[in-house]
Length: 412
Image 1 (tube, rainbow, N blue to C red):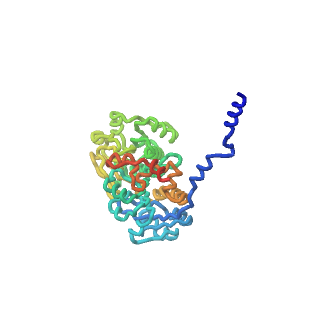
Image 2 (cartoon, rainbow, N blue to C red):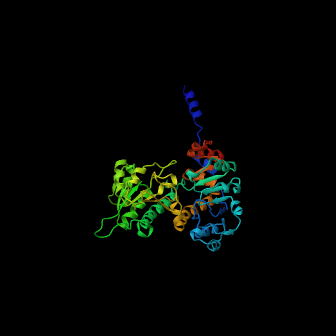
Image 3 (cartoon, helix red, strand yellow):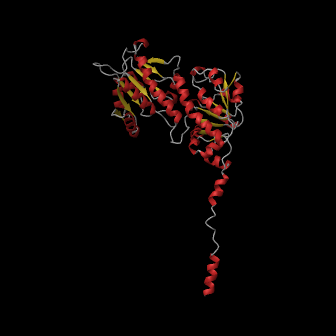
């Protein structure tokens, strides 16, 4: 019996020493690659009234001094008042042939890819650009898929704090700009009512209605309050209304979007701002034609949501050249891409996000390695080596959807 137990004891003996660790083995499999020299091309934008450029001369200078190559099409930064001379002094190469820029492995655009771009795209190219859902076409996506493009969109690009840095900056610009635009069109010079936006001692303040309590709404409210206007904010999310009040730091008149209440407030306001966002597709239409027809003649409607269809029934897209039209005596300003009208500030904001991202991608040995290490960047990718990884686009155009996490894991 005793010998049996000793046998059992001796059989149990072999143990793996604690000095062994399986973890280190796993770690060594994922060796960080040596940094890659990135070659970046920036074409001149010709579509979508685009005046911005995605990298400023200062950002180019940082990239070049880190060993990367930047090629820029002649006059690409002109609309944002960045000259070719500024770029060449920063170390960029200026080319006059558009096709030359498109030959580079990484392409950065400040406007979406359009049909004219597709013949110039290279196989396996990485493209960082905005994506306008309203003008996106299935054929365009298909052509990019055929060329096995990896595409990252400005709108869905997240940073490590899980927020959307480029969207946030553009929304801040649009929100602040909205009140400057409203003030301009209320003035007599632009056939407005001849009212000063805000108010002075002894005169009742101008009334501003803001529909949507996101970042655009918050910055519009800040600007209006700073000018002395009376501000009322509508949004269906009580959380967003609360957040707006906390961020601004004092109590505001807020309400959920209730049609009768909204109609009543619109009747007496001087400025109405549509700043509703939409995660997927079109923004909800909350202001009917009837509500607009009851507004005071000479009041101003600014529909910032026009990029995604607009939230006023009377809105129609206008351009920076012809920004307004009159309907029921109400001035409508419905220019999509408002930040493009403040191109230099907008370019600097985009550049502040993209330059560190490109440096990081270079250090990691390219974007494919970067998205392996930085999970938050995956939300910005809508095409990965030709596979469509954005669920909404696949639903909308009935194209095959592939899960990006599985794709990336399978490539390791």
